[in-house]
Image (cartoon, rainbow, N blue to C red; front, side, top):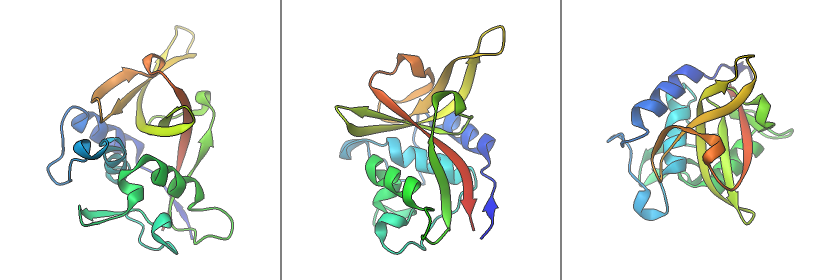
Length: 172
């Protein structure tokens, strides 16, 4: 399998276009615990990451065709993280999204930030911009999200403990 490129700018463009609204193609899960991961999955898919139906079980698949034909990893933060970080470990199928945890200063546009409260994963956001000081050093990142919809909001103003996920691309 060959690692294919994640189209970061397409994901960011989608994130900004739909940060304060809902794409009518997809179901809105706000009334069912939040729409953040559904929105982030849409952003990744807009970044040319294809659906992954190849996993050995539902925890290793990622797709959305309708509210009745989708995986938990498309719409819920913890199953999404499980899929992202276990999908391409040694001994797995090497298909679909390839991602890993990274450090704050390693984030690129289009990477993800997840929030934990009391150790429980509660939220997912996408990095849409970097804020630099006059020397080119990272001062902050701007993120977009659903569930308390925000567009290009300073990450430094988000409370909670954060983990950072680098999207390397996808295997096809």
